[in-house]
Image 1 (cartoon, rainbow, N blue to C red):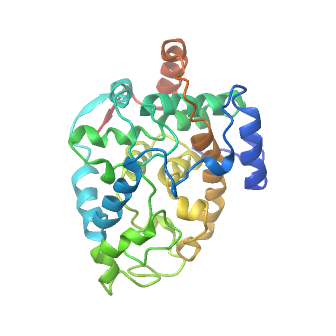
Image 2 (cartoon, rainbow, N blue to C red):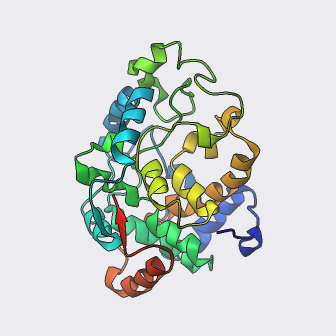
Length: 288
């Protein structure tokens, strides 16, 4: 399924785009500046530092390969997507310093911000789905193996990754196979050939990759890869296709980040619209 870039205006300067979204959506946004989001120096929630300490210690190359083998068979269960959303009603992301709302409310806030700006329905659906992979917690996975910023494994950890000092406890940081700039990869090999830290991004991407346009799939797969779409720390692994598609990841990111308001959306009022949208693009049930 291919979509023309004419459907959405080209990405302007990211700083301008973010400022514009903060001004336009929503009208009752709290008085919070852009600089106050993703505050990891002094996070408001005390779970954040401990989350990243565990994440950076245990997300090794071998761990990621093990989880890929375990979960990408999609043989745990099969259920309607709305049941997965019902689970997200109970999940608060320990890695997120910007909201204490459950994940379902965050998904609705993101998709409604995108819809309010008149983007195509597949973009709106991406907003609704992007964190659905956090249902991994249903299967007993700890949050450090499900949520948080993602990063390549199998090569040197960038100091641009949040709390990069915690990688000192990661065995790969002392392993000569994995602690060089390219590690197990080749220059500009393309992110399709790079293993990312394990979590909800890759899990959901693999689940829906046959149903959505590639622009949406890049948003899903790399929306937590802040070290690249914010810091450009891994350009040396990307190919030209990655660079083009990351403009869409950057387009999506402000909606994901700046739509986190303390006021929950009206789920019942919005449900019929989103049920129809899900039915347009996805099968009635998905394998998990």
